[in-house]
Image 1 (cartoon, rainbow, N blue to C red):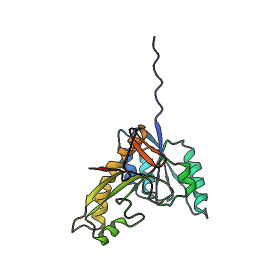
Image 2: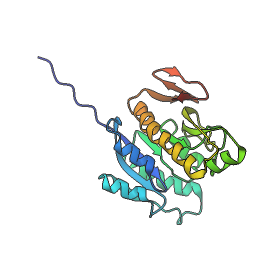
Image 3: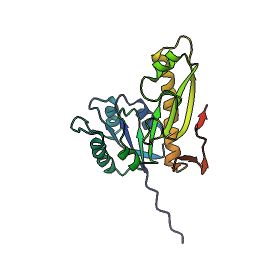
Image 4: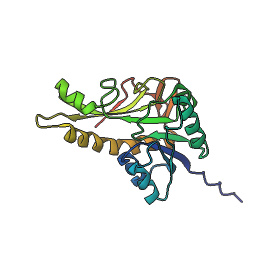
Length: 218
């Protein structure tokens, strides 16, 4: 007589946000994410993403930075809150804080970020404005593992959008967000299925190293 295998426990995800949470919503709406979003944490009490979490029955937490004089002190308290949920993956979805080395080292290999540019171009803020000012014909989105270097961690995937003559910051942001909402759940699923890993500074997918520029998604 055989014995039924114990069901695998769902892999656990914590999402960090600061604002509207549209990428969070894309993750919530993904029917085959490969894991469970167990908490959403924001540094902003009025972030609409917290309401998105509540509507989906996900624990929504706020941790203000105002009580912390040092970035690392905040990050240590944030990590204690995160660790209560024992996540397998931490997703930054518009979390507008620069993370300390303490935080990025502690969660090395399980921390993902989405950035609205074709990295390494236009790290930091105001990417749509900077693309328009430079007269670029292409813009896009990058998803990468997070390391100590701001927007400089190993790339996983990028997607390009065309910059048209009548584009402004609003229209570019919409184009980029459409790509983000498609890609972020896909990359999260790869990770939660065990297909995507960070080994040292090399990203592997199904055991094969990805190129430094990541995979161009189309």
